[in-house]
Length: 221
Image (cartoon, rainbow, N blue to C red):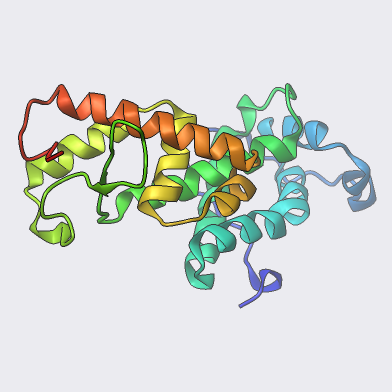
């Protein structure tokens, strides 16, 4: 299925725009097509569904492309694209125009996919003091299904404590297996920044896990 076949989301949400405020206005389509993203976002926040649909028409292909590049699965990319726009509908009122709308939406899309990644059963990797190529971070995690539940919870909690920049690079590179060049493209940063963030993420994660004082969690040998 291509992006041409993606359906405009149907919303049943008590968050963001109130159902009582939804307005199916009759503004000419030509006017909407000429409007700036910020103006459309403000109109959508006030309940204009045509304005929101125009934002969807402008940006859903780009969102789908980001999802597809990160997920490498067309079906999942379609689902996540819908999720992104549902999230956008809920959060549209928080866009203030401090950055370009495309930048804001790109960040929301990446965060949505990263949340999807973190819901998966993943294996976590051990870091060395130098942040070099890691071994397993938990003994026995070559088969994540055999990890004890308490260990999984502790690891996921530690990852959630990482700053967003560190966490995003760590999840993409060490959990999902993207190369630094791909991480840089996905996150819109340089390869050098990706490598630096990963190095810092590994060291911080190691320190967080050592605080758990659980010999199963940090088997540095």
